[in-house]
Image 1 (spheres, rainbow, N blue to C red):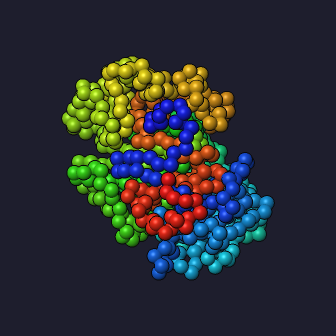
Image 2: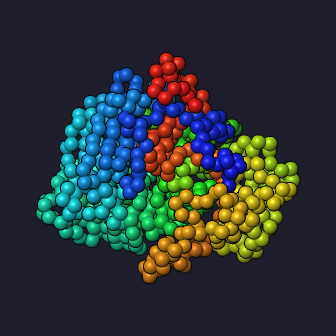
Image 3: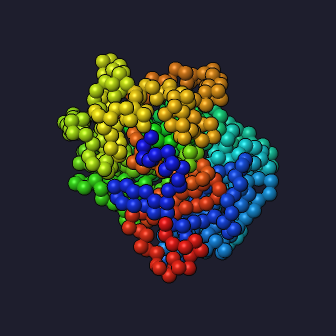
Length: 596
């Protein structure tokens, strides 16, 4: 594994970690939870989710946080790294009977200090529109469950709209609503608008305009999450059938697809410039997909169980002419709705768009993204130029490779990409990619982005023991639980979600799916789902256990990272240099003491 230490260290919950830009520290006084701070018994309940909004009030503290824990929904002033959380004074608190909140989203266009529009999806299929500042409940959609009876998995306002919102269900359907319209008293009748490979879009057939405006049926099984592109024109959906599907939202046309290595895909996000999509799920991997090329360009292996959230860090993603380590970010306002819920621009976005328009290759490009999983671990990843531009005839990457092989890794392995060894044994002896490359695969040798010291020559035994890649990428694909227990008796997968254990349930699902049109059994080794040895394998910059329970939230804000676990604790991690924003007086008054 990547950045963990020995066996005992593995089970310690970390309160800080370091990357090339410095140390991130957990602020214990900035922890949000239910007012009694008692860990929530999460058996059988829906994932804890967090939404942010900035209401631009005059006090300069306009951030608001909403989170659900079990049957409860809370709305607080979010003080972040500035002040300790005061849990005794929620602005609004709601307890639901007979159903549980599953997801929520603020409308950033309409938010003011006096009023916010918050959509809340529920386990029984309803969607509620509430104003937690005015403490009003204005509307309930799908109230009689005539539209869809299944759990709401994802709800989001359509970017740039004050009234349109999209709702996904575990039935595999998505519905477009308008807050101004009613839902009707009978089950809706639909008329086919457009049909394509494994998707169909219907309009609602009625004399007067009513909700839902559109019904999308996508793939097989639950539609687990969707995300709008930064410009709002495209929609990425991930489903239990293991497919990522990217649609042109207005034209309701399929742009491209990707298949997981196995199992369902659970989460998805876009890069700040809309050029790349990252998805994660039941294959324990994060997969990077190029929007322009419609193909997988890298996979990341660091988690030991299902990946529950992926997110790009807009503030650390950088395009620099000289210094790749610059921390970028500014407060200018912009129109695009950013995935994590703040309408903040940063200099990265404009620089990325400039790069894309001129198509020139800058000296250094680094996209930072993160993932959290059911293994209670947080992983941070850097998507670097050796992965993004593998086809360019630059001697730099190859020279870099040779230098690395000759001289070994830099001391400390602080964060630049360390490219994998060129010798065949390091690639599992699989030279198929080099002798007879498929048309859509990358030329061998494949670069490996790795932030850790990695010896290409000596110490091969320990490298093989600690790193599945060193013993062959092809072996990783068929690694059994038994193999892993031999090497890491203390590193068993959480909750039996190991690659070995999945075989019983998921292979049954896959067998069923082979009868559908796409026949996933035939996708492995194609552009939809390249083999492990056909694409670069990223290793995490850091991989840290940060909670007792499975992680369900990862949000990158300007001065901190926010994570949450199923016990109902929302944690704030101050970015490097941001801890000092807290005054000593606030620390003295904080309920939990000082900064860890």
